[in-house]
Length: 331
Image (cartoon, rainbow, N blue to C red; front, side, top):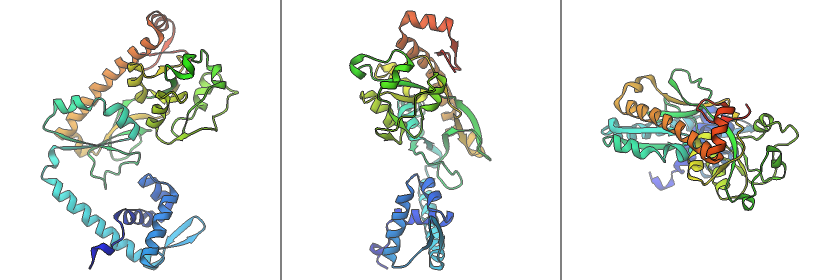
């Protein structure tokens, strides 16, 4: 057989997921692509094969008889490929640590700090898997994940790592340095939009019942990209504490107002129960919880620096305090 005639591997992965779920939408969620991207890959695969793999009924799909046979063969082939890959890697697997986390948290929280882990544990080879797709430990070759969610992850070891709040930030140079002085000033401001962080909960906490969710401008799918837009002076962004603190401390961003909107989700350290006792996972566990404590201290300093020494001292004595000691005036 001429291997050049095989369909692209990515198309086969998309087909396997769509066939397993018998749903393009669920396959898209698993692979972190759009419904349209899955549909396009499937149609291209069907054209290459010259046969229908799915019967369509509106947005509902089901495997054809040919599709079911092909799905079984494709799944077996992909599993064989995965097993072969695992065998090749298994010789040095004990010193490889694969960590999965959301792209924004990986880029803005883990990456700036990971050097200290590597210096402390030179015997461990770290692989950071940055993805917004939920890790399936029964299928993915991952040791542990830092998940942002509810903490309800059945059959896994789950430990709370860091709670989260939201607040508005902008570049010091935004609007020529004439920054909003009160939350009401945001009515006329350029507010950055994101699917991850909606403004409505923060508006409610800030007492801005009459301001609507922004509808115009770029919609950022990744929080890290929105943060970069704020750094570049493109507008005011509503950001998570975890990914903004480093930029606040460096002076690239300014926090506006001492008002937090608490998140219903938090970060969790998650791994399969058998792996929590392994040396590589224990080393990362110790390191990241120590880094969380340092992060708490950095956040308090960043808040004080943003407010100025005298204002910060007054805020710390007169305002309420959140879970890591930074002043807030509303909840």
